[in-house]
Length: 260
Image (cartoon, rainbow, N blue to C red):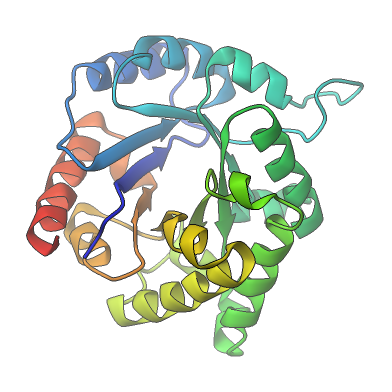
């Protein structure tokens, strides 16, 4: 049974230029999601301010895909948390596996970013995940616990309640990924919940939203949210169309009501 809202979101990654993003945001602004569901979208930086303005006052939250940990300075090509907050971002995605693999993100820089996002009143969406090799060698639990503990190190208990966590197995995301079966996700999320309780304490540890992402589609999303300790789904290409995103929200919300 879920006592927390269901978080259902998508990152547009490096897709949708300003015109397409504005069109999508306008379509989402007219959408009224079912009760108990918290939708969010994460557009590219080039459209963040416009999308935030269009969706301001609606039930759809808007996030950013990355941030630097410093407020300002000689960091060519970077975006600061101050800039994101001024644009109206409600949350910031941190530590996605693509950034870890291709842009040198480490557990330690992710920790700096978590603190920076919280410092400026936004919610960090901390992405964690195991590679295919780590999964095959049976060290998934160790990898995820390490990533989570370092990402949240030094965060005061009161601020931990603002954190969201998304487990995205690296082997399950992207065009070549394959969806994890429900039994594996249930087991992984149960162990992640235990780590969160160790970090944040019993009450807050059970309140931190724990999302699953990795080849999530309309066909399997409802099955994931039926599981204990799965507080929502973080979707990729299957939700880039506003119509598809709305359909997934509808099917997941129906399952949420049925299981709750």
